[in-house]
Image 1 (cartoon, rainbow, N blue to C red):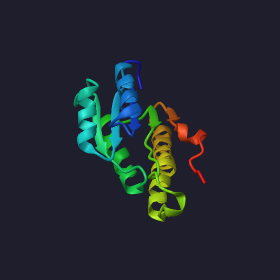
Image 2: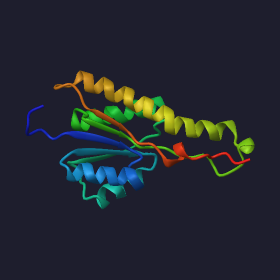
Image 3: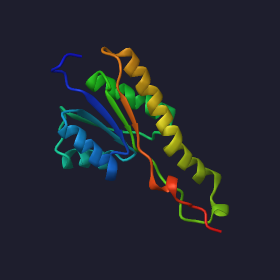
Length: 155
């Protein structure tokens, strides 16, 4: 990559909140930005809201907990921009506010897939790209939640 080549960032959970704000900051910092989340309409609105356009942003609907979705996301990123310099793992979700004993296995796995598997799968694909591109390398940022520091189970 020469000095004039624009760097590329991928932000998961980019349709709202922290992800959208991170995408905006990266765009204003001169990055091309790929925004991903499960709702394509929301991602497209986020691109308009942050001042992006077809040349510097890409919206890709993706469930980061699904390996095939993540592979398709990175294929779209590579086709559009050719490389990745920053991965901001931000996608996540919480369990419904119900007693733990009423939480179904499926509800629990939705949380695990979004919060844990998603970061793993996206990091794995990003590392593959970062090792294969010229020049090699990049940065991976994993955003956490305040809930990591709070007790969520009340008896």
